[in-house]
Amino acid sequence: MRSAAVVDLDAIRDNVADLRRRVGDAQVMAVVKADGYGHGLVPAARAASAGGATWFGVAFLEEALALRAAGLSERVLAWLYSPVEDLIPAVAAEVDLGVYSIPELARVVAAAEQTGRIARVQLKADTGLSRGGCTPADWPDLVEAAGKAQAAGTVEVSGVWSHLASSDAGPRHSTNQEQKAAFTEALAAAEVLQPEVRHLANSAALLTDPDTHYDLVRAGAAIYGLVPAPTFGDFGLRPAMKLRAEVALVKRVPAGSGVSYRHRYTTSAETTLALVPIGYADGVPRNASNAAHLQINGKRYPIAGAVAMDQLVLDVGGDDVLPGDEVVLFGPGGPSALEWAEATGTIDYEIVSRVGARVPRTYVGDL
Ligand SMILES: *Cc1c(COP(=O)(O)O)cnc(C)c1O
Figure 1 (cartoon, protein in one colour):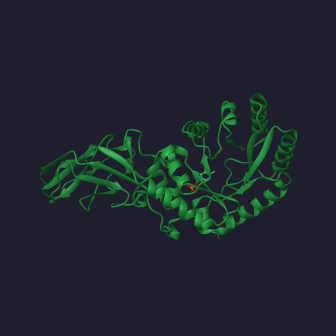
Figure 2: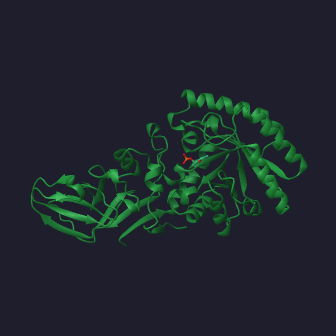
């Protein structure tokens, strides 16, 4: 194949099993939003289930409905929707809905009344991220409104939760201390609702701070073998994605040849250039130009000049590289997604989740 993202489903399964062992009695929610961080929504979810995940986490309603359409019956939490979206299909599909405000709660109640079902809602406290969630000032009113709806039998408050701003900085970081304290307060105020699950941890918190485990952990990056808290190590998790391509063309060029747009690279001697048919439309960051390395036959080569929409060029010197040779952009047997992230000023989450729709996903493993 010209290019492919090869996904090892056994790695996802085994990473989830490893995380389960780390969290003791807490359940694992596999976060499979954004097409399973680029790995494929349904295959990633099935692999995570095989590893023992009992919940799935997604951002958007259609992601939750796609899991249901694939026949997955685990609990699913969807946490982000806009005021124009129809909540009825999600309530009918027994998706737990994140709720941040009284108007959102009212919309879920209306959807529950229209479907004749009890809607499960999970109230999110904003403990300091200042993104989604309810501020401490508004929290008592939201809890009260949810209590009334629960008493009326339209909703069940299945969870109370929050999200950390600096989990990768470790348990002692002041922001984490503050948010943990704020979450304790939010939980105390919501205790009357008797939520089924309380949850705070994402991957980095799960790995570095047992105080955040509560009843459920929301693990995204870690299940794919990314490195959510690089300063604390990789925790032995296995990367699940390998992004590969094949050399399309090889040619000798003289010293002084300008390479790719705007000639941001010039050959210093007579050399061999290898053309790789993958570019920024496929998710290779354009600022990987002259920065990131790719691997061919066990050896790494820097990208020569600008990454184009569909292609990039490597200077392979005098090495014997042939058309059709495998090029590993990142993943097992090549540079890591974290190395790519560091070379391009981002995080490995972005490297995997932006692999383009044009790149076929292929699956390996026993699953
Ligand atoms: C994406 C997301 C997660 C997963 O985070 P990781 O760092 O990938 O584990 C957890 N919770 C929320 C609210 C998210 O948006």
